[in-house]
Length: 177
Image 1 (cartoon, rainbow, N blue to C red):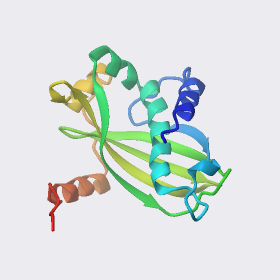
Image 2 (image 1 turned 90 degrees about the vertical axis):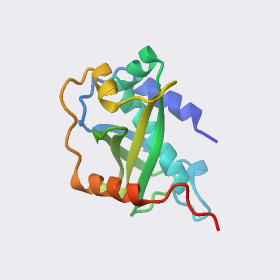
Image 3 (image 1 turned 45 degrees about the horizontal axis):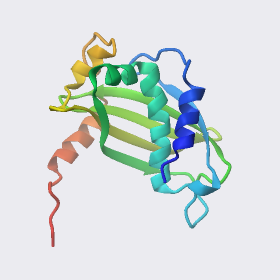
Image 4 (image 1 turned 180 degrees about the vertical axis):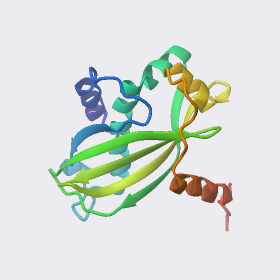
């Protein structure tokens, strides 16, 4: 079940945060609750991705994305993700989430997020996100302008462009045996 109450709490808690410029790191804190655990008593991998939602939403508010979505009647979707898990997070562990937009290409905005526990990175994810309208995907530069970003697209890190290239090679639809 989606943690709607946690989403409302994060939105309320961060409602007056200062504006975040594109590319700045946005920090939130979270607690791993017992209902976030898997059968091995650690943070479930699916719940980890849901927690990342709870960090991106206040980032979007602080960056002006939420306002641009409302004004233009746009939607937002995750179009891909590449998580990496390295350290266990257990019940009642407090974690710090770091979120930042890295840049965009012709269709997608790329966001990097990580969860930190006791100064160590526990996991990391690259999110490919798309802004949508009734006509389809909104060009990211159009969205960036609506958010008040007037400069060019930031140069994506090499590891992100390599992931984009690898994803372009992946067959779609997948093979059906």
